[in-house]
Image 1: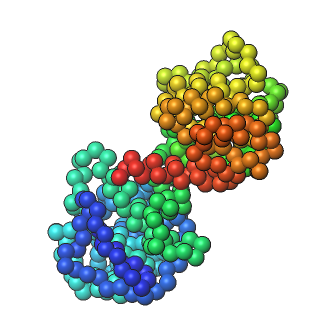
Image 2 (image 1 turned 90 degrees about the vertical axis):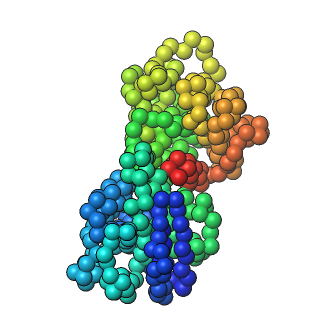
Length: 372
């Protein structure tokens, strides 16, 4: 895959299955690329092969990218392309293409936006998940092209992993579905406000399901769910018997019932056989959730009194799950997160908004790791 950058330097990079233009070396123009919001990336797909255009169009649209042009390279296209409002050109060049150097040169001369040269014919289209793998690699290139600067710092000079948090999860093609990525949120005194701040900064299509174990009176569970639902793009609900937990949902654990998830992902509410000091018990919710999702359960402990959640987090850490805590100074009462932090198992600490940003980064890192 070859790329022309709209700037003073050019970079060529090759990925498996994505070949370049051979000896063809596009010239580099000097112009400033406008900042582009990654959630509204618009791509012009150019390919002389109907089949290749179909593959490219499908892969991009399925992953949340808007395709504004999908045509063969022609003089008419070159003439009208500047009026289509695109951010990046994906130009497919393969062995069967008869496009002349003259048309390519004219396109390069006319288009100021970045151009990615790609040979999709190198892909084995029938190979399972090949389009997702291809898109994961292409996406890495698009990150730099559509966001040349962050806070005045060139993305070309930054480690790619530091850019992952800027990608909306929808682009990573993790469709909302039956939950497999679970985060337990534990909170007590001061927790509702901190959880609100955290959830308010998360996108609707985040491929994560949350179970909130918040210490409060039984009469306030419905009210808390409604208040949280009003401030977050996610769907916040109270626990209902038989409800199948899905990504993008926040389930508020009940006070007087034990919440578990059965093998098909449905909520099961049981009687509490052994009364706990706190209800709902963060420890119990954590242990039950880890047992159901031993490889994909994680936890964040927010503001609260006591040490509920400490034992559950230790159990989770032993299963290699992530444990994060709210930063002490931002808590109303920091006893709960402090008790976990003192065990040395917390991987990350921060205020609610920083915890949300870190979660989005980790989700995207995990998703890209799966497709690359």
